[in-house]
Length: 234
Image 1 (cartoon, helix red, strand yellow):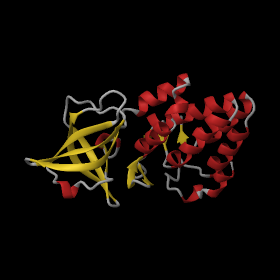
Image 2 (cartoon, rainbow, N blue to C red):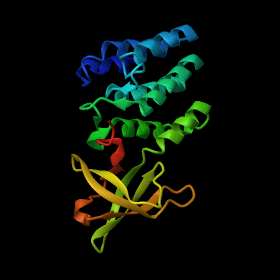
Image 3 (cartoon, rainbow, N blue to C red):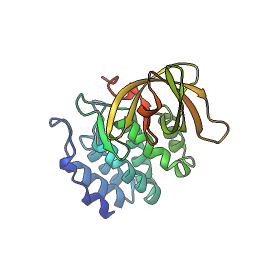
């Protein structure tokens, strides 16, 4: 996996007393080449003790979001021991808490996306693979809590807007939810949303009501994420 060495892991921010970028590339290379439990455990120790997470303190670092697609590649292509280790690391990365000041990462759909939401997005992109693994199904269930809504169209409605788009994950329809709006290179603007029409069957199309925002403030392609995943984390 040559792509591992194309990433500047040292350039990814992280708390200096905890994040050890040299562990990431080494750990990923060892895991990609692992052919037994001992090698997979060695890689897990490198990645889990200051690489992408610090398992003793329950902390996750921004590098985890960058490593997520690489771990999924390893899980799909590698030895069963490497697969289990990769999925275990993804489970920790999704559930652990980031340090203050290191909660967000730059993504193609927003420059300040919560780490957990970006990891959940990567997991859902490999749903066809993960659904066939016990650990994978558990990961998808956890990822569903980090829902994502991509706006396709907005219609004015009293003092808010009804937006139509694609919902990924699980957004309960019986409450108003604090959310972040990521649009036009600007993120973390708080809005309140509620489900007007949930997805039907296997369809992922849904309609949300966004209070206090007009259609021009909710452009096509904007992404709405749960606010609790960002600044709500300790």
